[in-house]
Image 1 (cartoon, rainbow, N blue to C red):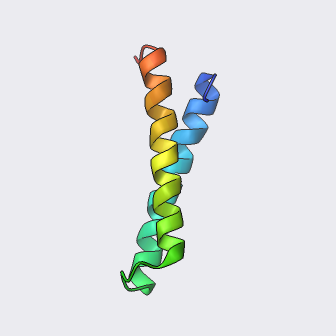
Image 2: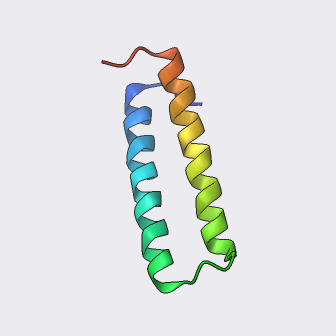
Image 3: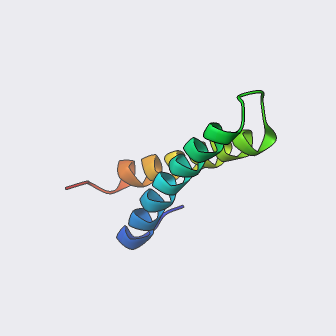
Amino acid sequence: MIKTKKEYELTKKSLDEMYQLREEMLECTPLNGDAKIRNIDIAIEVLKKKLSEYESRVPQR
């Protein structure tokens, strides 16, 4: 669970990095259900959920 604004910002940055990593992997790996890409997709979903939970608790400016 994200508790502070700083944690929130770091999680947003991590999510951006995960999207970038996924794009880089897709460039060199065909979409054939590769386990690494699935793991990245799962990590992205977890980060998005954490951000969403924080955003629902803390008003955004």
